Length: 128
Image 1 (cartoon, rainbow, N blue to C red):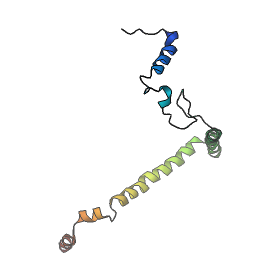
Image 2 (spheres, rainbow, N blue to C red):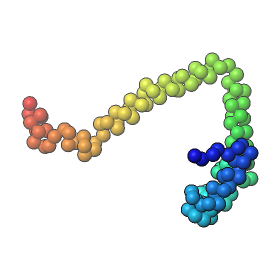
Image 3 (cartoon, one colour):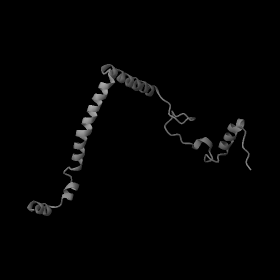
Image 4 (cartoon, helix red, strand yellow):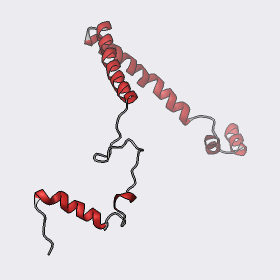
C-alpha cells in the first residue's frame, strides 16, 4: 500500500517522481516541449506581455471609454438614442434583409436553372 506524503513533503515527493523519469520519458525536463516561444511563463503556461501588447491593451480600453463618452455628450437623452437605434435596426431588418435573402435564394445559378427544368419543359409551360 502506498503512503500519502505529508503536506510539507509534497514538493519533495513531486521532485522525486520527476527524477525517476517515469512520466517524463526518462530524461527529466529535457523532453518537455514548451509551446508559444521563449517568453512563456513555465509556472502558469501563459505568454508574457511585452510593451507593445500592454500599450495596445491600454489604448483600446481608453478608446472604448472615450467613444462612449462622446456619444453620451452628443446624445444626452437616452430616449433619442434608443429611437435612432430602433429606426436603423428596423430599417435593416424589414427592408434590407428580405432583399438579401431573396437575391440569395433566387439568383441565376446553375442549381436554380436546373430546378426550373430543361428547354423542352419551358416550351410546354409557355404553350399551356
